[in-house]
Image (tube, rainbow, N blue to C red; front, side):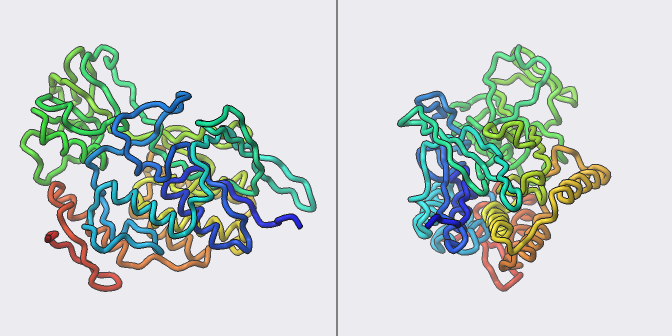
Length: 434
């Protein structure tokens, strides 16, 4: 007898892909075991550290952006998936190696590993119109095994969950004079450790989490660190050799001029300017518009409004990642299971268009449309209510906001603190001991 359960392809075996596989496996009455395609040699996605960025045997780029000494900006008490806590013996702010071990333990606990196909590069995801009693769209997914064979294999799935992240295609803005600069130019994607910059003057463009983190690392070994950004200057205590300046005006052979007119001779310049959204496996027939900052049209920043069996997990920015992935995955499976019906495609597309217009009218910039920040909490609640699964504990939002506020006032020392959960919506930070 033919297996009539829904077949779901999962692209990527990082945190989002593992979460998708875990919840698909929990509903074997409705879903066949997932096919998880991962181009790398192990699970973990962006949490896999590679000391020297390189190329695989057939020139497939290695996508990890992890640097050697990274410690999480968020505490383990809120980073975890709701059903799999981190070890209580770990400090609150942990090294990346502990996060990778956590993801490996998650995969082992929920029996995910046997469904992950490593070294498997998804080359094409094509919609296929199936005409039966009711028209529906399935997906032909073409995969090439990078290591063993040049042959391509195509399989058909009822749905596809894109969990490939958005930290593999670095965005580097075009700045006048860049081609003249004779110093070292790189993106934070390929930064690994500070020692090569010892005694140098280094500038960084961008004061997001990575830009600030790398600037602080470099300040321990560099002669001078210049942090260029367009935000309100950081007012907390900073290393004495770290200078904040506005945006870059232009490069010259050995120096950079900034918008305040200051000019600094540099040995190296690091772009901490984020990443492009990129889905090379989707062609024009997928009817999806994707550029550096915007993927359109996505209903709830998640569901392809024109083909609502194609889902993008974890595409949003400024979020609490693992719990956010969990919310989106559970909502997706509720949709596929039929317990959370979506509006008609025309209505979804109209709602996305209206949301985008309202966002722009309120002063929002197109590049920030997928940024959640404080909006993530109501978004998470909406998904849980619609999907019929438990809400996140209120203390998670409280910890997130408390840590952010503390970091603003003590960016150097905040990672030495420990989170204490005092009640359902109460927490405290105190100095880590032992």
